[in-house]
Amino acid sequence: MTKASLLEQLKVIDRNGSSKKRVLELETGFRKKIGAHTIGLPAKDALFDKFNTSPFVLLIHASSRGYSSVDEIERDILPAKQFSSMETSAGRMVEEVVFPIYGWQCVASKMHTANSALDGRKVGQHSYEVATLKSGPRCLNDEMSENFADAIVENAKAWADAATIKRVSFTYGVLYGTEKKSNKKDWHILRKLAEKCVARKNCRVISPPFDSWICKVKINGIPVDAQVRIGMDWWTHLGGESCLIEVLVAMIRACVCPTKRSEELNSLTIRDLPAVISLNGISESYNVGLLQRSQIPWLFLMARHFCDDLI
Image (cartoon, rainbow, N blue to C red; front, side, top):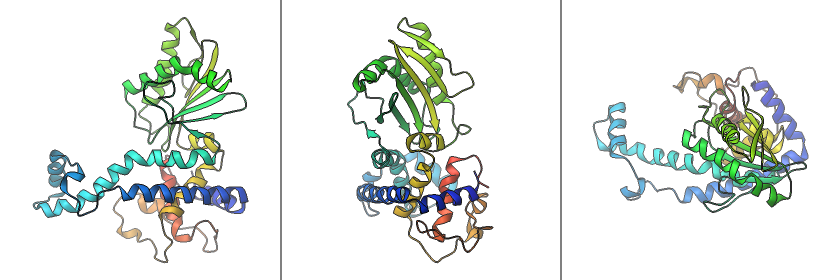
């Protein structure tokens, strides 16, 4: 991914009325969700039990930082709690805001039902689109992979029947990351799906997932395309080529206020972060309405999560 291509995409959506409308709707949705979530976070003067800390983690962290007083580690507890809380809830917040904007429906279902494994769905022209989403590329383990494969085999017919469309497209979507950054447990969903279909009479493999991120099977006569879509691939599937840039811009607008202050690159300690967010080479005349110049480093920082390198 290049910074030049990102800025060109930003120009494109800035000039497109439909894109701008989606960005503003997304921004409003994100503001509401983030506001509601942050109210529920512990205040800095909350009781100690509210922070749910691990005594072992506290001591190991103190050792790694060379702390000798409790007041030193106390400064780290609140931001650590906020990060951990948002890690578990941010993905769901994003789903709930984004799905309806791009014609999808959130799936709220009870455990042990046909829809338990699903987060979103859409009736497409030729297939019933269903998706389960994870926040990042390393969120899955072997047991979860097997459970998702079981869910596809056991529920594909029920999904098709509910939509009265005799074809199902199942996506395991990852909100950010790349195939290279995946721990490959997501791909194991496809491998296990193929293995289970070989072993069952009502299921057969049409196209195995060898050297690919898609497996095509037929279950109870229903064609099923199961696919893993990571990062940019997922967002393109959800809402088209401009979807990712629209979502990123909307979140930046909702979360980061413009400023006249320049980034202090020399103060950064993460080795490659200055190069990631640098505006070097970007013309002073570059101008769009959706983002101010001080917000563009945030666009680069967000985009870096969707590629193996940003140049």
